[in-house]
Length: 230
Image 1: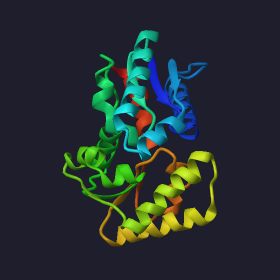
Image 2: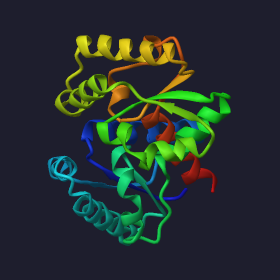
Image 3: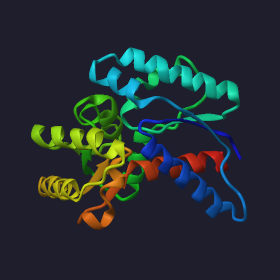
């Protein structure tokens, strides 16, 4: 079994899900008392979020790059960044480590392709929805990506940072997200990417009439595959 190097804390609410899912899947596959070999570097999300909101992405990349370097020195065999948005600085992180990084968008695109889906809606932070660093990885696989309108993007972003990252799950927000998903489905989306690792805390498959791709679950399972089978 390879040792997984996790960069977490963005937010710790979703990082806890990564830890749980990875260990549950290792136990499911290996049985008995098996659990995953994990080294976790958990950053202070307040520091990262301020860098995001103020456009100081280079500084955020330096923080995560140093985290990756620390994980490599501690004995990790590969890196997983437990967030969608901060894959924006993956090239900068690679400058600080020689270890491979399991990219969340690549794992997600592979699952979408397995289902033969050609058009998806994307929910996430405003950075993930509006910028190309994430969408382009999906589109490279000949999958069209739809995003909500500006009003809905702003509300999704606010819900993520003001509620989900703080562990607050509001039924009213769930209903609003469901209406956004319905709108994207009406535009032709055949599936929806839950492109923020906290959204899966709010929205489940039973809340949608089209397939949901929970990036936390997909990414965590991809990490287990790499730890056990490569």
